[in-house]
Image 1 (tube, rainbow, N blue to C red):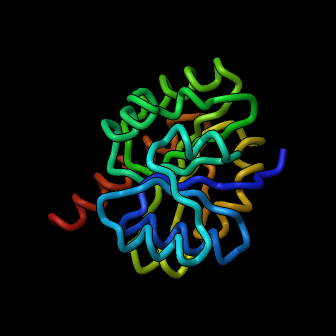
Image 2: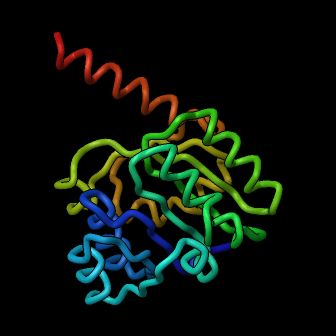
Length: 187
């Protein structure tokens, strides 16, 4: 199943660049309303559609990318009121670009898979500057065939994509990366 429409939830410093590059590469994009209107309004002016809750975004998309802070926000988007779980169906892919806890990632993935969809971890490296340039680094965790299916979209905003293994392994790798970066900075 080819990805025809992409959803993006978390249009902030990193998410704006992700969305901009997805639109520039020709994918229809749906974004979720946010209190910081400037990045949303910019993407809407470039052709993105906007909805005010995650359920509405997921209902019209084949792939939903989450670009939020971490596990509490991801869990709220998945299980909260108007959550993504209500739209999970056969073939839907949800890709989590946040820095999240691997045990939560695996639980969410199991819940999504039970409904016929896929939840994969795709945490990113680098800065908003690279996000705008389409040159983020991504670590991916999930079934290889699912990662291959969404890779053309990931390549819109990332120039380095590493497959770490099963669901949750990319989030483990991201936490190790952060630990090493902070240790290096401290030293």
